[in-house]
Image (cartoon, rainbow, N blue to C red; front, side, top):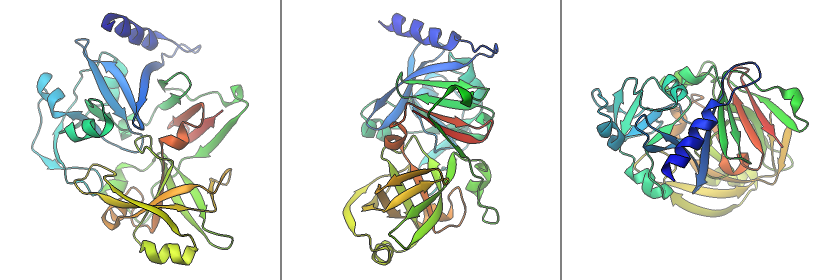
Length: 319
């Protein structure tokens, strides 16, 4: 069975576009709201890599680091906003059988991912974000066939009858932070969220495949005062860990009147998780801002395909 699966993986990678440019096609599974790429290392051992389009970091578990004798450097604070996990940087790992993955991940962080494995219910060997070295590529997520296509060419939009395209946005000028400098072109679009008939707010919204819900709103403002002024009651509150930090956050579910994405796609009465995370906001990808949002996997998988096209700096939703 293992040999059959490996042969299937190799078959996926061998496919070529009509233009003669090889596209890397990798199967994935979805478990507990996460996209898990299952790909072999050079010895044929399967690695489970969490595909997180909202992250700009490549990580490997400390166990994988030990098994492959990858040399690490001195410990540094995590690059994740608000993160306080221990991280050991390393150079080019060059451990994957699929060479495209080695080309993309030229450096990374060694991190203990046992807690993430327990949270996702599957062994997580690493986290694959989209770093600056990956930004000459188009990442196509096919939710019908459960395949991620990594291509160095953009899709031909004329081939699709039902396609919605958004322009990616840059980090807000004038509000640069150490984190936002890394993420100048992000997997984000402009969004207007309508609070009621008379009030609205504009924010940037990151398409984040590592977030297992539909929408989340981060703010550095007082949530009780906000929801009162919005005339939007809190439906429920939960407390859970939402990113790579060692503390939990209070998540308040609210129902907004609508979301308008890039002036093109209107979503009526979306349920949004809202949390106050001042440190996260101040260090976030858009610098100092009152609001920004996440668009998660639950929304993305309602489409047949989602393309994160860094070549043309666009996001495509296909049905």
